[in-house]
Amino acid sequence: MSKTILIQQANIVNEGKIQVADVLISGEFIKKIGQIPAEEAEVIVDGRGKYLLPGAIDGQVHFRDPGLTHKADLRSESRAAVAGGVTSFIDMPNTRPNTLTLELLAEKYRIAEEKSLANYAFLLGINGENLEEVLQWDTSDLLAITDDGLYFSGKGNILADRPDMLERIFSSHKGILAIHSEKEEIIEKNEEEYREKYGYDVPVKFHPIIRSEQACYEATERAIALAEKHGARLHILHLSTAKETSLFRNDIPLKEKKITTEVSVHHLWFSDKDYESKGTLIKWNPAIKTQKDADGLLEALLDDRIDLITTDHAPHAIEEKLKPYFQSMSGAPLVQHSVVCLLEFHKQGKISLEKIVEKMCHNPAILYQIDRRGYIREGYFADLTLVDLDSPWTVSKDNILYKCGWSPLEGTTFHSQVLKTWVNGHQVFDQGSFDESVTGKALEKSKV
Image (cartoon, rainbow, N blue to C red; front, side, top):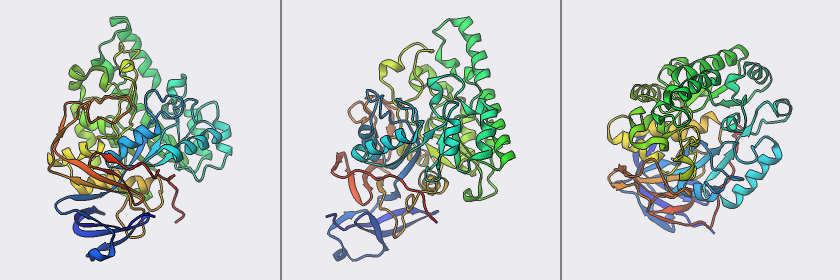
């Protein structure tokens, strides 16, 4: 039986304000918020001077399970997630085999039920092979369908490059289509040009020129135009350029938007200057670009043209990352460090705590219509994280929890720390130790 837990006098960051109050957890849910007598609880947690946030919902991860578990798996990466204050995640379909059928999707849920310490959802992949089938299936209970990551398994799988397929989906599918938005034709031309100059070992500093602003902007502009033509629901994943932000609206609430987007932490944290020291460790698709792009993305996040913060957590074995440019795998692990990265921006005066919570907790729940999560509210699941804003620590091999064992943030000192994390009322993480006796739950869509 789970015990009633009282978190006392924490600074609760929720729904645009910060207030000092108590939170009573009973079973899986938040029972009461306010001034609560200690006698009502069996376990007391002192929250004085600390900040209580809703657990973050990471809208884009690649946890590699099944089929690529030498890089990561649902246990290892969910463990890293909860240690970083992330209590729910949405996983992409580029596992092996690609998640292109409802049977393969169900198998991922079965594995997660056994292994994941965080709550979970999985997106169904859509490409040229299964397009007609997906459009005939009932996908109304799924959070979204996506092409993300499928380009690794064959040319022509980026939907942003296939207006014929986008037209077909937008004219038939009523739910969210989440896409990776780059134009392959432009990228291939740039690759050819740099291969002629440098052979197969192109300096990684040219990555944002090869996977250029133009490749991103043209793909995003076309996808939005087609979605608007059909009144369809489109979500652009991991926006990477300041120029693209002009294509999105901030004059209506998120609930009313049909075209939405997100920014991943690395596109805010790093810039092209970091390729010199980090090399292929920060090779992502779409590429990390200029400081001007990072600044423009942050500005669009603050003024609500960008709706979510995600990680695009994509671990690879270090040997796979350190290969020459064309062989080096794109992506890196981030889910353990996303919350503290944003808290560091807060310490630097770049973003408020309320806005961090809006973009990492509230808005993913709104966008994907997730039932009773993303907020600190009575009757909601007790997905919570307690953080100390004045507790410096440095990322090192000793405290990295990713199965791949490395991070592009090694050597970085953060000034805030995640102390405790609750998932469905169960305290899964407590200052470095884990209670893995209870696994997370599948995220469900709200019926309201």
